Image 1 (cartoon, rainbow, N blue to C red):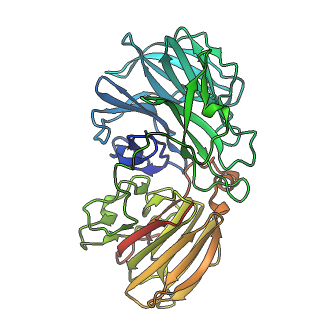
Image 2: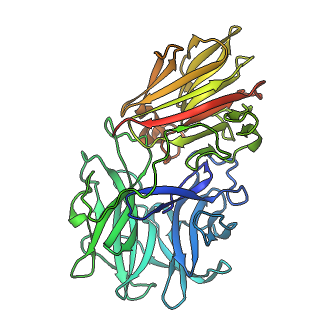
Image 3: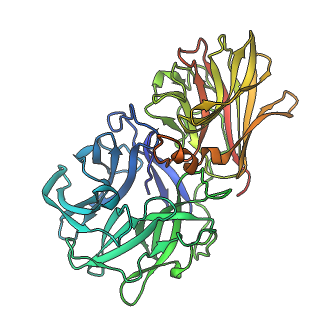
Length: 486
């Protein structure tokens, strides 16, 4: 299973499972700048809506680089990688997918025409990427805006076209149609939409859509995206992946979860124990590479990161670029995946100028983020909390610390982030709070001049000279991310 990554690098994580419940990250499709050049990409631009398919011993991942070249695919015989350089297709449309028919023909389909668009279909030579013939409109959905995310299947002699409608927010839904030919005409399911929570305003899962089907020895399932709002209509963890059972009724139409809302807990038979160990909470930086789940903002400047210059530490060299810039800040972190969690790190940093800082950062986008950093004020070393909302930085809060190692932390609950300094005796000094809604998709998307925000919060390690390079590196001893119960 693959997922969107937008402005983060490496692009398109590949997850593997043996039971559809326990998943592990095994690699990424786009690990080289030659595959994914993110220079100048704004937040929530970049890689949209990848699809993975397997045919004759080869895995194919097809996606769109929005505002960066259009639609392309890469391929590999091992899904963990390495993957090929991109095979570029065209700039028309988004959300591409591939369908391999039994007669050897390969179909390329995507959303065309924007908000009131349609699904277009075209033949493709998968060995060369050459498009064959003209694209044909095959379905406009049931009338909802943004008919997108198409996936074509052949099941029991019929061609099924499943799409999403309503826009990827609270009106999101999945609809389906079928035909005797991939070219149509398509007959809509009389029970459309086959999945939505848009009428269930108080349900903990919202925005369900953009699904894909899988058949297993125990039956059919569907994976799809959705989000979990808290504190009203605000979600800050981004879109997440959901799973539900699917059956086919007597008329040959899919029925998801017996037409019931998607539950937080479902009963499954034959589910074995998780076949691989859970990753450790603490990263000690003793390995030659960073964990697979760690990501950079756009393509990293590699000389600003080192695991070898001081063995057992991650060394960050603060560049002139900051989190405010549409560039490549010295930042590496992981996605927040639970409402309740604690993040800590131990850093050694000796700043000599007020612009130099290193520590923890929690990122929504360029205009909305917070940093808890070791920095320099009035000829002394301090820890400062700096919070940016809609591009405006609140008055910082500072506390003096002794030179040497400093332990910093962020505690997350569903509604708040709490920033703290760990005292030498183990106690904590709180420096301030941030509402989670301040980093939510709804808040970030409603700001003047903003694009829609898709990514959710990323928490990690950061160093910057805020206009010029830092005079000294920052050495991080360890990084700990602990989920405290959801």
